Image (tube, rainbow, N blue to C red; front, side, top):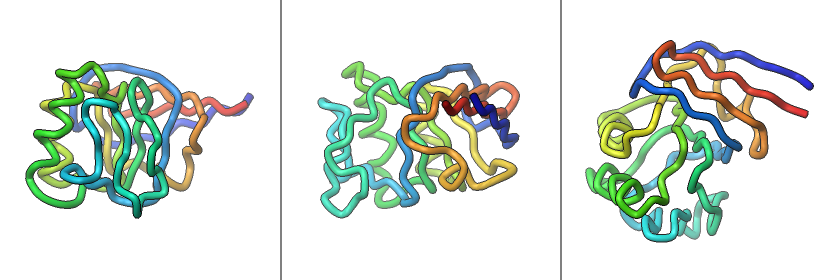
Length: 137
């Protein structure tokens, strides 16, 4: 087993772990996710029809309108939220979306997480310390 540790900065404190779901793209909220099903519905996304519920969602960040936060808040209310979020860069949409989703979130890591983490890796996000631990078989 291989273990990789990345250091970044806290966006939302807390600790969570789960299987990674990774895209090298930015995620759109409005028109990009279905908060009831917890899936990506943007047909242009490489994660189209993938379920993020209970997984660690890894992306470049958030794109689109301010609806991003509201839609991710709905995932919390529908029990379809990701376990945690990891962003390459954080903007106001991603930060607010993480806060209202109430999941640990980390950004601006020592390496690009979309290049280091692979879908299926087991990832532990320590938002308190800004640390991401990746375990790969």
